Length: 181
Image: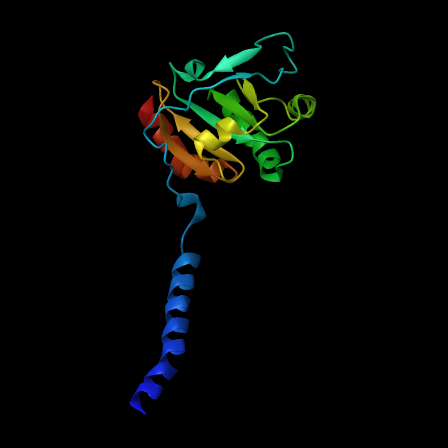
């Protein structure tokens, strides 16, 4: 008889354990996701560049080596990504302040990306077209947009998931960016 009573408590224990796990999961900040590439070099790439509206005959391809030499931001974006569109005005503000921002146009149409950059005043030094998504996969991208702080040696020092705005820049990213300069 005691064994039967003990079995009655098993569902209660399971429900309590699941409730604790769900409560813990809901209290986590998704922007605090660790990056496997933190303190590692930007993955190697040699990709076509989305032609910039102001210089359509300019740079044809770009590589990871071109990120070296100055602290910069590396932003993964797409024309179908609403938060990507929302952060562009702020990126144009950063560009006007001299912050170099490089783009990775993720799984997108080249002509649509070019039109989009013309419409929203291209904030990027250049933006490569990651048509098959391989660079995004190598970076560990799982949400859009994502922005990386890259040091002068081409090493990723910070990963920001989601839209970047003045608040995230001032409180988190700018102090890291400035400390690397």
